[in-house]
Structures are given as structure tokens and as C-alpha cells.
Length: 88
Image (tube, rainbow, N blue to C red):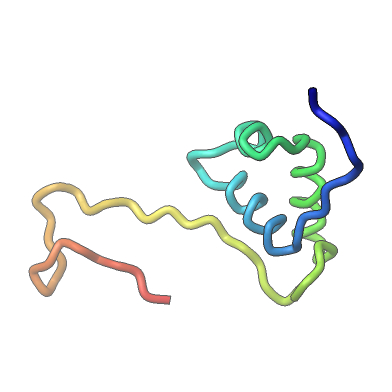
């Protein structure tokens, strides 16, 4: 038997993590909401709040999903390596 005790509170950091996870190319809002047992509407609300700067925390930063493709086979970097890496 499941007992419902009220609303769960999630930290701003957790909300941001779930929104970013739902925006990832390999995921979807539906998949993330099922995985973490939250409603899709709530995830969409957090997503909208993030884009409007209303989610909380710092509002001078944005998230951008980035996909870095692998180098085609047989292609090497100018230094002869094959690992491009990513430095931020």
C-alpha cells in the first residue's frame, strides 16, 4: 500500500538536473518523468520556469544541450591523435 503524505520538495539543483536530462537527445520528458516518478506537466513547468529565469538560483546562466560526434573511422587530429576531448 502506498501512502501519499503531501508534495515532495525538490531542490533547484535537482530540478535543473531533471530538466537537462529530459532535454538530452537520448531522453524525453516522458521517459524522465516515468524514471523519477514525477508528472510530465511538472517537468514541463520546470522547463518553462528555467527558460523564463523563474526556477530559482542564478538566472544569468542557461543550459545548452551539446552533442559531440565521434570522428569518422580512419580520421586523425592534426597532432595524430584520435581523441578530440572537450575543454570548457
